[in-house]
Every structure is written in structure tokens, then in C-alpha cells.
Image (cartoon, rainbow, N blue to C red; front, side, top):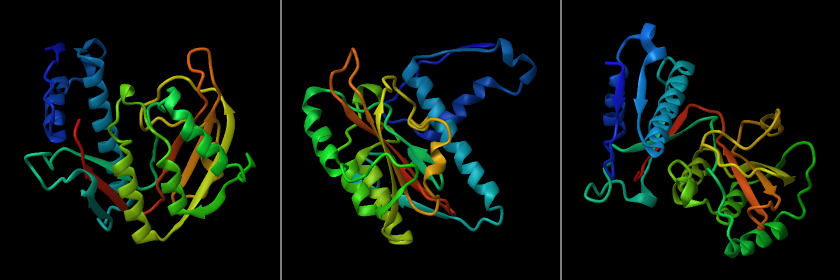
Length: 248
């Protein structure tokens, strides 16, 4: 079978079930170039997301082959233990050392209040070469004023889950974090939640021993008159996985 049409779209699928469905590709690398899968873009993004999380977890296991890494289950913001509301088998993961960003910031007129607030709060931080050492509490405060655009999908970048994850990191690694600020950027295309918004080697501007927030101010453009701040969060290196339940 070289051609598949995938239309199954339950409201709360299990990640392991979706992975099992990927067996439609079979074990035929020799024919992979002529294998075709037709499905809605939203479902394609779901497959990509689960694939990325699986690869990130595999990389962590390879990094710690003796199995000495921690799995931390975060359930507070989504009540993962209530199976009639959310199936705890539907999980996402934040892996040590990985970066995450909203697919696109919410750029509507009402968000000007958040832009103005962040402008004021960040005015003391210049676009210098390097990172500022700040508190993790400050990062949490900043991210509360960075709303993602739901039209582009909210899965890994769920504000409540991000906040709960950072609070968990604070309990195990302390309240230290890094901040990189940049202004006058012109990004206007949506990204995947693991794709990032950085350019060049900007990821190297902040050390990797504590959480790092890269927050970039985007200029207005022909389609959107509202300037906005677009964040990217990188979790610190280590031997842990933050696992959480979420609704697709």
C-alpha cells in the first residue's frame, strides 16, 4: 500500500494511538519516495509534534543511557487526573535543553496593552550582545503578557502549562534565569512550536544551565499594525523530562 488517506480526527486522541497509526508507512524505505499520505494540515501538524517529542525523548535517553533521568508529571493546570475531562495518556513533553515558542503571537488591537506593558518593563534591558541574569519569577511575569494566537494552534505552548513547568523547574534548579532582548524584528510568518524565532547563532547568547527567555519585539507590517513581543523559551540542560497532559 503506497497511498493512504488519513481523516480520523477524534477530539482527544492518545499520542500512542497516533504513533501506532503511523505504521501505515510500513518498513519499506526502498519505496518511501513514492509513498503518499493525504491528510488535513492540522493532523499533519499533530504527527509532526508527536514525532518531535518522541525524538527529543530518545535523545535524552541516549544522553543518559544508564537511565538516570527524571520524569516530572505536571498536571495542575489541566487536571490530568480527571479522566472524564482529559485522558492522561495524551501527553506532551518539555525535554531538558529544548526550546519552545508560540506559533504566532496574538496581534490584535487589544494586545497593545500587553505591548505597552512589556515596553515599560523591558526598557532597562538593551539589545546588548549577551544575556542578562534575572529571576525565573520575572520570566513568568513577562510570559503572562505574551498571548499566543489560537488561530495558529496552541499545543506545546499553553500558557498555563508553561507557567506550571517553570514553577517546577524553580523547585529543582532555583530561581535563576537568563533574558535576551531584541527589538526591530520583522517576523510575520507562523512557526512550529519547536521551530524557534532566533537567527544565526543567537541561541548561544545565553548559558544553558538555567532557563533562558529570548523575547523579540516585532515591528508593525502591512497586514498588522500592532507591534508585539514574541517569546522563545529554552529549558536548561539536565537529566529531566517535564511531561504533561493536554487536549488537542
